[in-house]
Image (cartoon, rainbow, N blue to C red; front, side):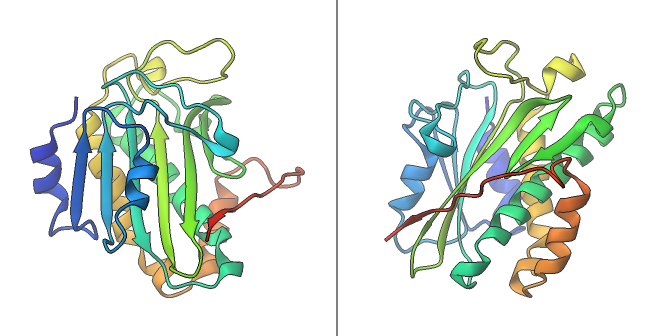
Length: 224
């Protein structure tokens, strides 16, 4: 379970996050974030999402209190044709945060097995441990970055090629510490988006994926 008081003390006033909403259960953190019309830099956390989904409305399989399921709502002043860099930014720096956390806290596993799969899945040993669903409101520059990260869930539906960090660390992972690490890494590197350093973001992303040279389809979900 998440320690929401500890999370608030660690993030509010110390990172770009200005408000945190926490739910024991909710249909979707992305859906809730969309309703926050005039709020920015918001973190929406849930112990369980009854309607959690990934791209193309695929259900996100997650046990209550075992994983990280959250949405960041933030404005980015970029052109519509630069939307893909939101994807590159969040997928790469989520990858970097997980990589760093494992290097610091799980010395017994090889972080070389951690990769980004196009467009924004994080794999460990070719199994999906994390996915990102990015939604935006056209002409408002509001972005909802939904992140699901398998952390302490040990078993998954056989139809999913999925795994959790605990399947490799063999020890329970501190959800609070991992979440705080992710937000801090995102916060530290936001200047790359603010300063439109898109080439830098893309180069970082390319170095961490094994998809270069493969065919892929990219779909952006926009709301009017």
